[in-house]
Image 1 (cartoon, one colour):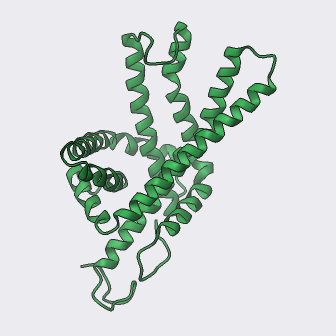
Image 2 (image 1 turned 45 degrees about the vertical axis):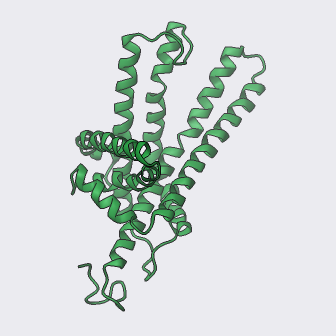
Image 3 (image 1 turned 60 degrees about the vertical axis):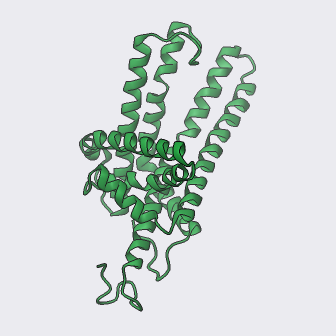
Length: 263
């Protein structure tokens, strides 16, 4: 994804605008994947409902429930990979159907799991030692996911490149991450409020039915956060790569000018 050419690093507002445009333009292709992710994510709760158990961790869970949780988690991670690849193809003008990227998304599932494990270990170690390193890594390592999905680098290479990208731009990255978290809150809050309003309109429904309606509507509206967050991640990654390229230009060189290639 390319932002507008400039001799200055893109700011938070430009990243947010670019991410919002990508979200809006790619939503028709991405929404079915997000809806599927919502359905898959509700499978453990559906299993609890079939057993007549409360959908909380406090209620007893059997081996089948834990197997469904693990399987749904893996499928959702695969859908995140697929969504990122579909959006990246959209940015490049590739009109290939999303299903064409399914195998590639599955192939990158294991590296992404390795990245998650390494990131959690590094962040946890940083929090235990001095707290501040953990906070720094929590923000910085968010850039490693889109880097890894490009398929050019290994897990250690993606982490190292992400740290290079964020160096000198940590506060901007923190601002983008805060915006993403705020968007998630807005999407789920809006979905919950819509569900409550519809449940009150269906005044003849049972209490259980009303609660189910609130959950379904909340999940459906909340599914918009997935393509929005991935679009924001794409825009943030593009901005960081552009900033890194600018930092490598010879003094006085202009982006795109002859001889202005990165060293």
